[in-house]
Amino acid sequence: MSVDELNLRPATSADVAVLFELIKALAEYEKLSHAVTGNAASLEAHLFGDIPYAEAIIAEVASQPVGFSLFFHNYSTFLTQPGIYIEDLFVLPEYRGQGIGKKLVTYVAQLAISRNCGRLEWSVLDWNEPAIGFYKRIGASILDEWRICRVTGDSLSSLASGLES
Image 1: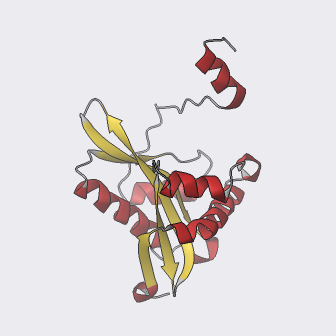
Image 2 (image 1 turned 60 degrees about the vertical axis):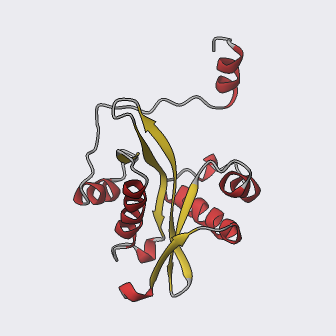
């Protein structure tokens, strides 16, 4: 691949099927295929519906989708500025090591700067040493002292109704 063949662009509703396939490929790589319970229709509604909850960037080589980044805005009360949270960053295995991941992160970083965001952040699985190394090389700090808290499914319903688990 030459840099000239790489194209990064915002996803459109026409990309939803391929984007969902890339999401499933990411889940397989992370050994989390069982966790993919959503579908392309929901993804389309959430990216391109009346209330867009997230945005996505598609990476193409010779017009073939080979990766993506899906992200959304968050907010830092300490900075009193918006930020961008990258939910997913993925490049197909056969296209890794060619700078595509870095270009995807750079693209989102440029969006963050243009939108006056105070930070760009994401999570990484603790076993994913190649990704951790990559993130450190591009200047990211790995915040070992922070832990993700998550409430889903029945626990979310219970919490919302005021019931204890």
